Length: 479
Image 1 (cartoon, rainbow, N blue to C red):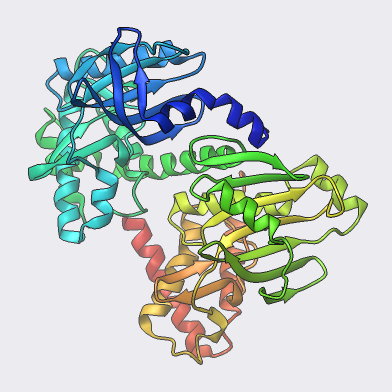
Image 2 (image 1 turned 90 degrees about the horizontal axis):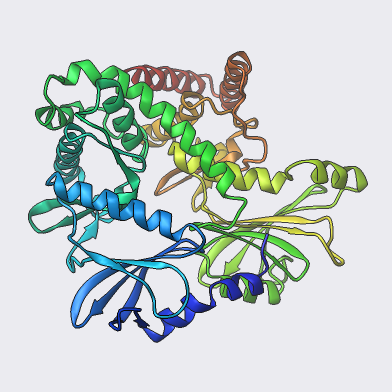
C-alpha cells in the first residue's frame, strides 16, 4: 500500500507533462495541447493533443513493461488495419526527449464518443440498433480471426452515421482463419457480460446481424450456449473486481494517511476525502443524522463535499475482534468488496465510495465504510406506502437476482431494501457471500427466500410475493 507522497513522486514526470500541456519528443518534434482522457497509474495515459498542428491521440506507455505493451498495441492496430477493420490510423512510435516510456500516435476523431457513453444516452429502440451494429462489427472481426480479450464498450468508438470503430489494439489476438463456434460464443459471452444482466433477453434477433458476417453460423446454434457463457464470464469479472478493490489501479486508490488505511474510488477526489477527514468526517458530529447507534455499529448520514453519504462505523469490540481482523478481511472490507460485486451482477446498491481502517492512534481498532445515500423508504413500510405492482415486481426481481447469480445476502429483512423513484437498492452487505459448494449455495439461497417472505404478515401480500418470485424464476430460465 502506497502513501500519497510515494504515489505523487512516482507520477512527477507525468504530472509535470500534463500540467504544462506539452511534451518534447526525441525526434525534435513536440506534442502540444495535451489533454488527458484516461489514466492508468504507472502504466498508460491516453491524451488528446497536437503534433505540428495536427490533432492526434497519444498513448503514453510507462513503467518497466512499456516497450512490451506498446509493441502489443502497435501490432494489434496494424493487424486491424491490414484486415480492413475500422480503427483510427496509426501515425508512428515516438520516444520522449526526457524520461522513459514510449508514445504511440493515432488519428484523432474529434466527434467520436465511446459506445458506453452513447449506450447510456440512447433509448431502447436506439440501443437495439447500436447492438446490431456492434455485433455486425464483432462478427466481421471474428471472421478475420480476431479475438477480443477485453470487449467492453469503452473500447469501441462511434462517429457520425453510427459508424463504429475498434480501438485498443493490445486487447486483440489474431489467429489464422475465422474463430470456431466455441471461440465465437466464448467471446460473445464476454461481451455480453459487460452489459446489465439480461440486456439481450427479447433481443435475440440481434444475433442475426452477427451471423450475417459469419459463414455457417446460425442464431439458433449459438443462442443457448451464449447464455451460459455470459453468466460464467459475469462471475469471473465479479471475482476479478473483488481483488482489484483492495489495491491501487485505474479505478481504485489504496493509501495510508494519518494513521488510516484507506481504499477509495478514484472518482472520489482525494482532496475532498482528506478535507472531509480533517473536518471530523469519521464522527457523527452535530451535522450528522443518526440512523443507528448500536454496540457493534454506528450509522449516520452526512455530506462529503457535494455528496449525500452514509457512514457506517464498525466499533471496536476488543482484542478478539482485532485478532480476527488481523487474520482476515474486516467486515467493512467485505462490505466494500461485496458492493462492487453487486455492480457487476447488476444488483442495485448505494455506490461505495471509501473504506477506512484505523491502524494507529486513538481510534485504532475502528473501521468505516462510506457509501452514497439511498433515497426512498425501507421496504417494511411498503404496505403503508402503497404496495403498487411496479414496486412489488421490482423488489421481487432484486431478491431473485441474488439467487440467479448464486449470491447469498444473509439478512433479507425488509429494512435492508430501500424503495425509491429509481427502483430498489440493497443495503447491509456485510454477510453477503457466494458459497463455492453448490449445495451450500442452494441452502443459502433458500434461506434468503424464506427470510424475505417472513417479512410480510399479510397473507395476501406474502402470497403475491411468492407468485412474483416464481415468475421471476421462470423468466430467468428463458433469459
